[in-house]
Amino acid sequence: MKSCVTIALVPSIRTGPWIYWEDLAASMAKAASLGFDGVELFTASADAVDPSHLKQLCQRYNLSIAAVGTGAGKVIHGLTLTDPDPAVRAQAVAFVREMIAFGAQVGAPAIIGSMQGNVVAGVEREQAFNWLAEGLNTLGDYAESKGVPLIYEPLNRYETNLINRLNDGVALLNGLSTRNIKLLADLFHMNIEEASMPDSIRSAGTAIGHVHFADSNRRPIGGGHTAMAGIAEALRELKYSGYVSAEAFPWPDPDAAAEQTIKSYRQYFG
Image (cartoon, rainbow, N blue to C red; front, top):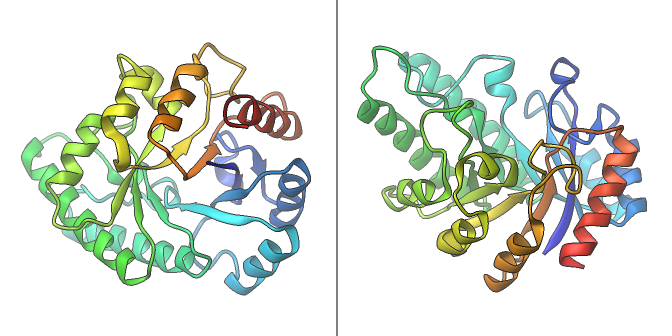
């Protein structure tokens, strides 16, 4: 397994669950000094960061880009893969394609979380899932052409009424034509939705391609009541070798949150 910390470069979402903010180079320098293996980026768009500059920073600080988020597509532009308007769905697919292409230049997958959207009033649930599947199939195949997987994230019930649990995510992926999508196991969302987080991880198995490392209250691990020992054991049993990435609030401040995260990572996965 590999340790990872999040960096958000979008000032308008300052209250979100990301450890470092705004200054990419300084944040990467701090992550490297603490011994993280990689960073996960949340940018406003695919052209917000020059890929050549990002590669230089990765080499300078000996860090990998674990993943790139696509949530700005919804947060800033209101785009989702399940919008009833076909023009909006097309724009959503185009936005994610651009993020996939950006991430692929540094070997990083893109994550689809909030951009999956919801079943909205007046739309049949089956129809919304058909739109979601259509978008995921297109984007999964596109990511494959770029040499990276696509990551799909089940969210808790307060953020989506589509897929909330890992097992439902597995069923969704099994029904797609693309075989290039992995699940994101977000411990914060799982704390709300799963009866047993270790059992859910074991059941999802190799479908898991990324882990978000946050406590029950979305503070860094150690700041809530999540029972991490069993979760860590389940991931080790699966021989999970991906990133364990801190998508958590910068509590009480970014530096302390990063230090707590790497301390907890070493405690459970060291």
